[in-house]
Image (cartoon, rainbow, N blue to C red):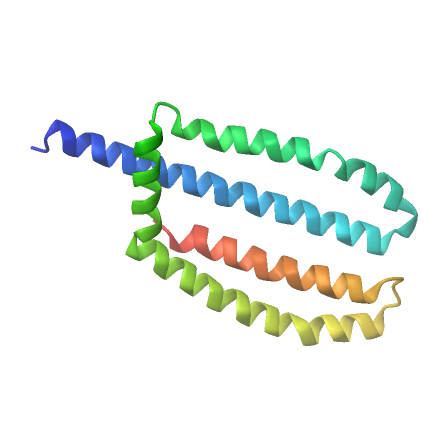
Length: 153
């Protein structure tokens, strides 16, 4: 039967894993929101003013997301946080999922380039370079974060 200290360490490890996963989900949500705004600005140039006004709320949403993610570490002291985060980042499985996610993201961005180039030659848009850059960044980040979420514990 596991001791009290072992159970507490396991609970704390689960708490840090939940913290990490929530942070990754919030990052994926923020990247998706930014990509949607870039797409809206490019596809509907008349709606750029409205999109810019909506983007003024993004810092507020980020603060709310940081507080919500940080609440999952409630009750953990600062020294325990530092040690727990160090253990989380030194975890072999996490490092493997980050490395695999980086490879997947690179492949996805490289495959997206010719597809985006073909799309932009067929369709006339006011800012094709902006669309290609924002779509490439979104694809890379979305694949990286998604792979980390799927491949991690």
